[in-house]
Length: 183
Image (cartoon, rainbow, N blue to C red; front, side, top):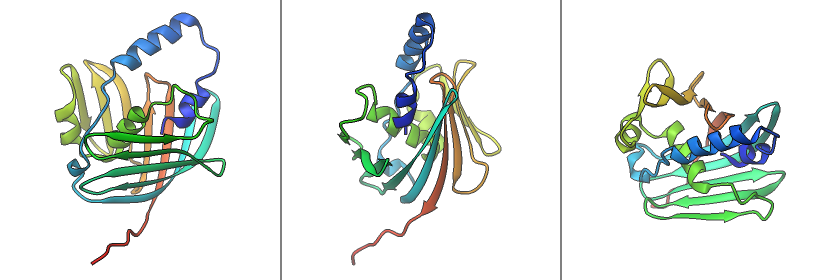
């Protein structure tokens, strides 16, 4: 999900600002919850609209999670840009050559889990000094009193993730897909 935020992060900013942001980003916890922490299977086709500063872009994604694996495929400009497979122990990534080296599959997985995994499971995995609370269709991730990220759910199958520290917003519109099961 960070695909375009990192692509768009090339905007010119003062060096001190960049260093401060990098330090804060480095201190952010990366969620690595097992797929089994999600109480029901997830199978969604998504439209992801990224905004970083004045720049924006839209990509498509497919997300599936069952008790054993979480899989994500992001399509950009008609090509598979990123493919992730998380089994709760190891994260496998396949990346298109055009992706910047700074794109971190762990952060993409972390954002996915921040939006979709249960609040209690996320909160239990956070380091000391960090908290996640949900109230009235809004999740707030804090470090101490500082708001780090918010997730709003304006309608069913819609979410808006704002990574305040990382400086990007992600609008997610999802459509359930049918997953074939074999007897």
